[in-house]
Image (cartoon, rainbow, N blue to C red):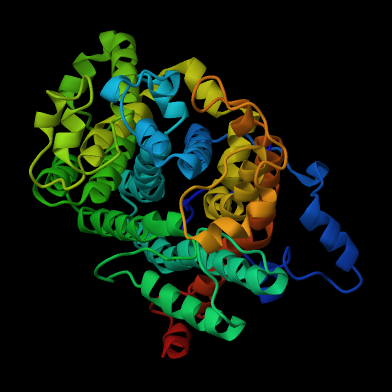
Length: 511
């Protein structure tokens, strides 16, 4: 079993470990910067790491959340590949994927209720990311709050707040920079983004886009053209700030008042303001708070939830199935009239509050919370997400999210062309660019939509290659960035943190 590492958008530690004796940047970036005489050993470790160096550690109580996060990132991978491949030959096929079973007379296995989540589960995956982040980011703060240690709570929140921007944006920055550099270094054209005439123009355009993209309070679109899948990262950053502020603001509230405030905030973000992602973060925090209180025999826990204890097994199975059904909400457009045109969704569409612009997020809010709440109460499902494969996915999940799009737009596009998914959408120049790849190795395109041999065969190459690249990025970018952010925070402490506040020497150092 791999040792626990930071997964997608994760970060539970407060980063203020004051027992660390080494403060050198060389230790922080050790996996990236090879030592003298060890270049080839470093290169071999980057390309193909040795599993013997992994130290087995006891599985954490919330290891299932790492596995769930990783599996959700895998669903994003599948979703984008399905839409890309099938949308190249017929955009209408991509629309069919995004609608319910029976929409306009289309009865496809891949759109059947619950089953559709394994083909177009990218939407529920993003909602799960936000709930999990709300849970994970508040875990340590709430544990300190429950124990009444407000001093350490302040230290923990200060560290988390300081490190969050580095944790989220530096991997995005580095992967997109490597991506644009590859265009001009090896001339690997791709359909998703257009290269500039010179590398200098490309770097300047990348800088302008990224500085705006990484600004927390930016108004308007939050896309970055070099990897449009990164739209969720600014929302992740905003949701993280809300969690940190909520933990601080409610640190002196009574338990009842804190739970009520968390619930009211979630209601406000979902039903009054169009802030679905904020509501997802808040309910993640609320679930974490309730789980922590349930484990404390001396702590307050809502009575009405205690009364449901004898029926919990039945309740959780019902909620889990309901969550899987809602997770498949039609998502082709943001129009309510289009939602109502899908079988089984007409009456459900009237539940959508006025504040929610895109209907799918309202239903995904409930679906993701049901799923996250039920998994630890269903042993067989919890064991699945604690399995070695899901834990591996959890470890590389952030990097998988970052690299799957660029790989799809370059290698994936060419392999799909080779097996028969020849592009009919785009300018004549774009279509001509891949003409040499078209039907180079044609395969049968019959069978259930989404399970055609012509679609599955490219993944013999694409899936392991994407996992391999994601693992490299995890070890050479993602994990060093986590350590770098911790190192930066420790450096700001100035070395006086171990001294007592009333110590005059310490006061002089602080001055």
